[in-house]
Length: 331
Image: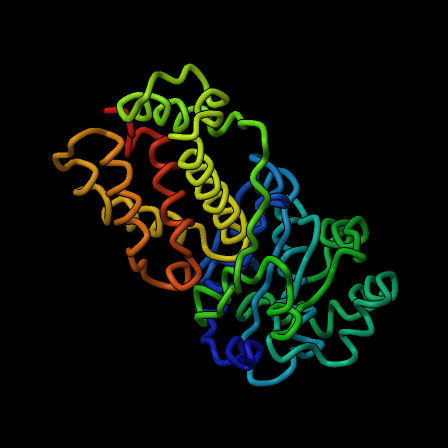
């Protein structure tokens, strides 16, 4: 699937939304992000905020240019010039980094300048009056004032970069946006090894299962070790732990490769698919556990996550819901 061509086919507003979805996934880099629309954006299409100070702190600017050809030298200068003009006017601090998002790329001259930061700075200053000043504000010429010149001189031009459609599609954090916009298949998840020791994240659902096992007999089980040592319930508890850790591995993989709402929707489908069985009448809670597991195994969840969700993943998701109190096994 040629995602670069698909990105090139987006409208200007769709490209901005796509980039916003891409930035939304980069939670280790950005505290928050913002999509600016229409006139008055002051040269900002999408902004990624490093801290909660937003535009008063460190931030990155992503300028989207959905054209039918490569971004020209003048267009690149004017877009970046808007940032210096508005920063000089006190509208916001200078960004930490500036990215041109141009699906068809940049002309060679701009690429060469970006690759030579100090040469870029000097070319920017030299070109201001002729190439930039007449095009920043309609019917007005914005001269190179001392304030604007100072902003240009203090800005770190090594932090100007660009992405065309191909480079954008290949960015590691772009996968969820490709899944959302173009139905990209994020691929299969990999099963993890079940740890021998009971993990802190298991304490709730296993504590509930120990009470359920006491209804089956032949006795009570004060802890997981006692249950695992019992031939009557030990095999069942091992199965439940395998299912739980399969669901954990499944969520860990798709949390990074699909939009965040996909996993929530998957969980909701599992819950709604088994809750009637869970709330039905049963001989005892052990029988109910088995019937809920049977129902979860045959559920067909929708979308790309449904395609990759094995029966143990769906069953293990029930244990996560038990952990959270939505499907308690012991009441």
